[in-house]
Length: 248
Image (spheres, rainbow, N blue to C red):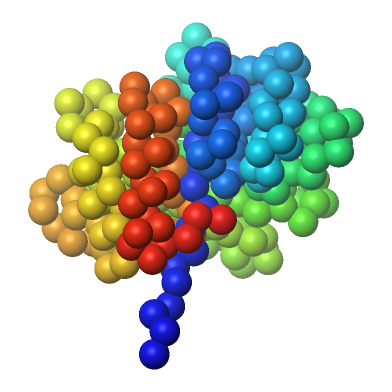
């Protein structure tokens, strides 16, 4: 009997000012492009879109709190109306450039503090869902498994791609360990592979307390700003295939 092949999407956040996209994109199947909230401008957006087009990588918008100072990693105290308008403007900016280059937006993935807040806060989650509905596009949402925003989006018939993180440790409640903790990020490529295989093959993630927590993922993120992201992606690319996991 043939063994079933697991398919997984590999994504990374790009256009964030590191300039490593030419090395990252060939190793990805989708990417999330910063569109002016925490990083990115028209020049970087167009550059990454062209690279994505060249390497047949799916393109997504990566909107955030409009907060370049804190790189979108702090909950910004702004009104719902301001946040809604900012997210619409960010996604529209990327969408317009993508369409001009003949590229269709595949998904939306909030960034940083906005991503983490929408995972647990219903008001923020609904605001992002309203943005997606207003866009009137057949577009997916990248969101954490069983999160508030994922479950609400499904109720609104929005396609949800469950995301897990290759290079981040988890708490017992499936929230990410804060970057202020020394054990937040996984740097060793072997540890990253083990972490990913556990999530994909066993549908479990071992939290920092040692608990085995159920998780499902159809996309895996490697952060483009992890210092050895290229090394990790190359290692995952070859070793996942050897473990019967297809990247697409």
